[in-house]
Every structure is written in structure tokens, then in C-alpha cells.
Image (cartoon, rainbow, N blue to C red):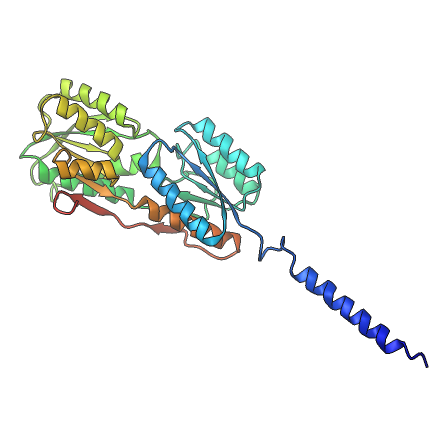
Length: 312
């Protein structure tokens, strides 16, 4: 009998155990690898989307995930290039805030083909497969904005609407909500009329220029609904320059700091706040769940809040 045999078997058993333990602790395994998320924003030249990005980054940091951020600069082609780069970088999940809800569709479809789940935030893609859509109810935001403007103006008032980027779902939905409020006789008991509707691309400078043109063409208007606060603040500048502060009332959407300051100062009447930081946080949390093959809500609404001088 070979006296060494038990020691040989013990040594082999220990070696096998070490090998199995090493395989089980592979840092590249699905359970332990760092989740990589691509966040394609329409623009970072807007405080709303900066706040959304900050909320997303905070959530990513808390979860130990890597967040790659792209600034589309409101350019469809640039955003498409950034999404292609994310696909090349093999992100685990893509979060997209489209510059245009139709133009983004081929990019979403490319991500689908690469088996990368896509979450749409604030604005929706009109095609491709979305794992989740996280946003405020933009139709409701427009309706609430309309109700506030009706409160501000007098009987039979003529009002204008500044439109965001044509084709963006937020612009379409907010415009619909506002027009619904104006058309609803039970809401619009003052007979308020929409007499001007012009594109200002969600930009403050465009809001200023467009509002100047509207005031020239319609000097009798007494109210303006802007589909975001940046355009609203541009309109405020034009109204101030004409000496019409307190005579032409402005309502916006987003609830950014500058708009709240303008409401406190009496330059704006109201805004409908959307909580972009919460949108960013929820989008990243959903992305991490998808990366771990967990289910997420197909749609998640972020609550709205009307801000006036009373609660600003």
C-alpha cells in the first residue's frame, strides 16, 4: 500500500477547491461587473437638462455605475453620432432624450439590433423598442399652463404661444394640452383666444426675438404661454423692453431657478415644474435594473407642480 496516496488526494482536493473559488470570483462576471450606461441628451445648453444629468450622475455614483454623457446640442446628426459611439463602446443600457422624436428612431433601432435596452426620458422616441419611458405628463403640463394663463388675463384676452423644437414630443404634447385648455369652455370661461403661435426652439434668445415680433404684430395680446422656461424668460425680456411688465402675463414649463426668480420678482406669472433631477435618477435606476435583467415599468410619470408667486 502506498502511504503517500491520502496526502496526494488531499492536495488534489485543495487545488480543485482553489480553482473553483477563483472561477466563482471572476471580476468580469455578470453579477460583479460595473454597469455602463450611455445618456444621450438633446442639449446641455439648458438648465433643465443639466439638472437631469446631475440627477442621473448622482444615482450612477450611488450605485457604482459608469455614466457616459453625450450632448446633442439640439442637432439630430450629432445625437445620432453620439448614440453610435455608445453602441461601439458597448454600453449595457442607453438612456435617450431625443432632439427630435422622429429623427431619433433609426438610432434607437440600431441600439435594439445591438441588444442594448433603450430608455427614453422627458421626450419619447416615436419608433424602435423602448424598455421604459420616464417623463412628466406633457399634455397635462400644457393644460395646467393654459389654466394658469386663463387665470392671469382678462375677459376675451388675446394670447400667444411660443413653441419648442418642432417634432419634439414635449413640444407636441404641451401644445396640445394648452390648446385643449383654451378650447374647453368649462376651463376657459373668459373666452381667451390664441392669436399667435410661433417656433422659438426652446431657446431664450429665440424666445426674445420671436416675442418682439409677436408684440409688433399683435400689440393687444395680454398673455403668453411658452412651452419651456427658457423661451418664457426670453419673452419676459421682450415684454420688459416694451414697458409691458404687469400687462402681458407669461407662463412657462420646467420650474428652473431663473424662472422661479422671475416669478418672485413679478416678471413671470407661473411655471409648471417637472423635477428633472428625479427624471434622471429614475432613468439610471431603471437602466441598472435592466442591466441586471430585472423588469421595469414601461412608463413612469414624474409628478408636476404649478409654481406661482404664492409658493415660489
